[in-house]
Length: 292
Image (cartoon, rainbow, N blue to C red; front, side, top):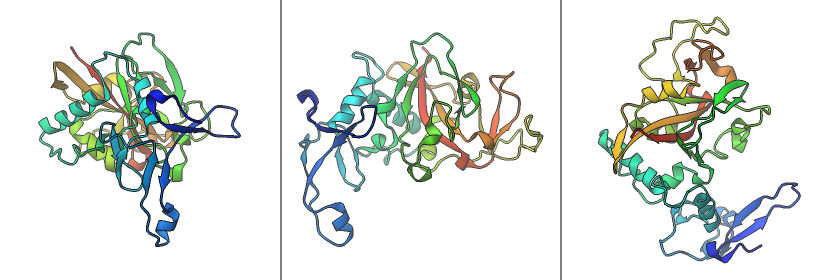
């Protein structure tokens, strides 16, 4: 079907589903990618939607080519933004790079066209800034409290792990769902996490302690917590950008069976969790809030 002309694009409905699933589609003229792999030459010229001439957001596509983000995806991103809001995707990207630069990082690679949209899937952003009610859930069998006062920029992880199996991101208690935790560190460490995953830091204060759930030695690992306040304290004093004092926190998903519990989160909501294998903790969202 053709979508409304205001965001000029082609979409299709996925058949055989009870729920409506709209897919963004592109029309490419030339030989198929499959034939390219077999040695055929292909122009891969996209005819629909039409090229924006650089006015639309861009990212490196699956073929390694810098291309327009599909207008339907741009439309979905726009639905997550409130008109007149200071906190736009562009503000976040520029603030993120500015914070890394202030901490001494070379941000040349991060400033390349399309890089931020390679790291973040802004279609799945969530805004908790105006939420005041305490809303609790269970994720992966463990407690999760929504991060009131923060805006969450979704990390681009859909289909990235487990051969495309996304059950670890479920939010309905189904098998395979991972727990949600927070990880606090200076924003200069975020690019490493986004590109290569977590690593165990040098501060291992609880390595010799026992897990309160299993009695096993906690050992060396990545520290995280179900407590947003605890995580935010490790992010430093924030970063001043365009008149706003911004605090960054990483929201993660954690394999429940891999968690070593320093204390019981049922009685201590700010408990520390330690994950020995960094592959058992994955970046999920970058949360930001302003202090002033």
